[in-house]
Length: 196
Image (cartoon, rainbow, N blue to C red):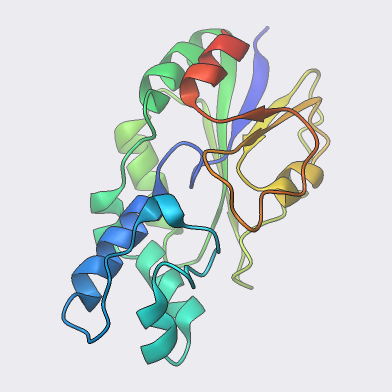
């Protein structure tokens, strides 16, 4: 029987930061003081440091970011992290692969359709719609199956479940991924070596 492998979506399978920065760069390029946002420098969920014009010109910057995440433009620009698609395809032979992701009401259906188009081989998709906008906390999915594995980029999500094995996907340092003293992976090659 296959073990259950839960994998987060945004900033774990796909480079959401890169897509958000591309949208920002298109929309604010003609504003005074514009500097192109570099996704590699992203540290703060609301993109305060690399997309400052949102915070200077918008009444509700967090809502603007949520709107970006819910736009078709975001999903058109979305890219896998290196090797993610290939490794997930290989993992489905050995594991029951379950994508477990938080979503906003505006992007949940688009996210499911994107996953179906690009990762149709996964066994299950769990969407947690968090209307508060915080986007973390997956305790409603306890992951108590025997030897369940969970990979996520946010320690709060990892802490909230009872998976037997938990791995922080830490592609880069941020101001929200430091509260973790468990195992860390930083690429899909590492996940391949670890789980295959």
